[in-house]
Amino acid sequence: MERNASLTATTAAVLLFLLAAEGVTVLRVRSLLSAHVFIGALLIPPVLLKMGSTGWRFVRYYLGDPAYRLKGPPPWVLRFLGPVVVGLTVLLLASGVLLLFVSGSLRSNVLFVHKASFVLWFGAMTIHVLGHLSETARLAIRDWAGPTRQRLSGRGGRGLLQLLSLGGGLGLGLILVGRANHYLAGSPHFFH
Image (cartoon, rainbow, N blue to C red):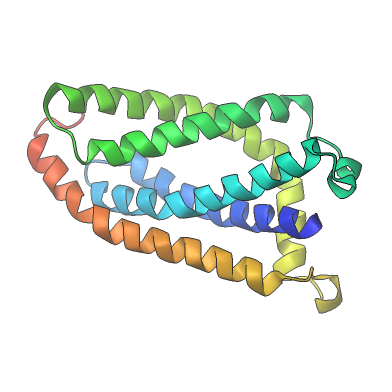
């Protein structure tokens, strides 16, 4: 159980770093659109890994696994917010990718969805991150920087999963980043 929690925590730490980088691109998205698209695509596989790891913990808890039941559920606010964060994350990432492939009035509708989902996602994610910050930091530090005897078994496998997810994101980012210039060429009044 704690190994899965560690995968979730260390993946969350990677995601926090990538989301901070993506946040920087939002400040000047027109001039940083290529970086915004690349980092957004890079985020997709680690986000899927995080959702899978968290989903596993959720299923094990509700199936009555003693180790997961012993830890107990997260606070009610985080239990309520979890599905909201997942839905908004999927909507935000999917609309961002879709923006690279649509044109005309559909593009402006998808852009509206992307912007609106970002605003809602940012609020929900802020509460979510603050609710899990201390546990995430404790588990991630213990797993990667703690004394060897305190590290959890399976660290290499968790690291490999994270590297594979980042490698998949890197490939996806390289594929989609070329669409950023195509997007700008089709949107002379991008954010006006």
